[in-house]
Image (cartoon, rainbow, N blue to C red; front, side):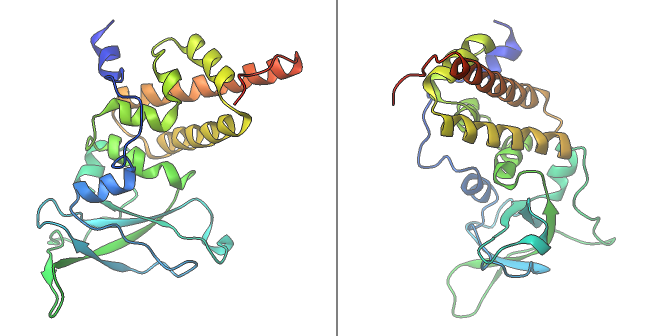
Length: 239
């Protein structure tokens, strides 16, 4: 197996853990507490985020959504994703963060009287993307903050399918056999959305792109096999 392939191969853990949520991991890496907006509220120009530790603080917050603002329902909430502009400019080809005025500095945490801990005021950048739920995963790996390939794989494919990597035909056949129709639809929706985000934002990490493209191709082929089997009345494994 080549060195590039071995770097992409999950080590030995194919299951998710309680610390596997990409947005939680992003907030932890940038030392801020995850925040949310009230449903259907307007996106503010800045946001005060609670600081976990005064180190490696983000420069901005992305308010990420995949539905135009004029189509938001009463319960819609954009994702609030911390980011550092220097890292994003280094690792992505598409520029989504406006340049700061000359002489600007990174935000500095501050204390609030009668309140425990520190806060930092961050500019909020609204970003319309093809698929909002997969943006934290894209940034987590696209910025090089996370390198556990099994964590990426477990967001894209069932664990049994990951175990057949890197053999796309075997992976697709197994996925078509073990997944329910709903599971196939969910994997297809997420993997297609992540792939569209990659095409839109242009991460530079070719190995990351290769792995996601493999997962997307496997998912497409699995759905094609499922449709062919259903037409021939070949059942999937019972649940």
